[in-house]
Length: 261
Image (cartoon, rainbow, N blue to C red; front, side, top):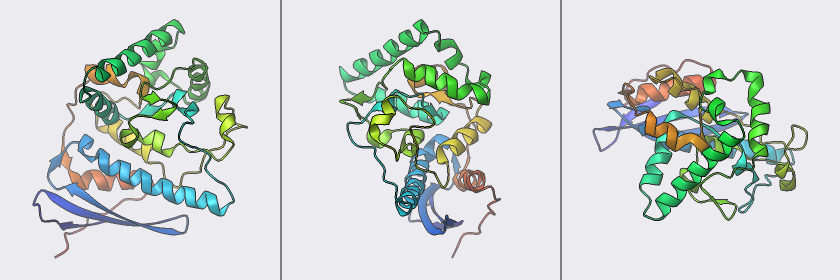
């Protein structure tokens, strides 16, 4: 990874060249040069995710597979969606920026979802993701899906905040018939095989550097969680965040590159 100064002294242009599944991927990303909180890099993580998903989709095409997800197909928007702490706070910002009465409408949907989770006996466990064992996640996710609780941002079976959707949502694409998603099983629904998992990487990176250490936050509890957990994390230089993220993604140490002249 190389960094070169841009016109603004506060930004560096980070360039990463990766060979993924036989394809070369080049990413150019403006990165804050100085002390930065991880949340400020969320747009970068979204761009990375979209780039890796595009490679994954192309690989699926070469295998004769086609993505069946379409606008208006919102079955997956009733699943348990794990997001990073920084994403929970961003979703709260998105909601708070909405004009009334829409802001109150969306918050009411979150409140109604919590009530349904409480009635189903799922809420308290969902509030403590650190208590989940690996083998618990899938069966709990199925129990959650059975409640049929739509994402509060789902409208007319489409995402109403598509540009702001979480990383996990960006990565979830299926190559089996869309009709199967209404009653998903391991056998009936197959997803695009991801070449790199940005969402999981960002969640682990966020958890390690957070004072709260949440391995993930359920999207359906994003506003509640963000209201109770202000960002008190320590900033570090933007390039340092990027190197650590790519190191986690690839499993290789990314050396610090000297600025080009």
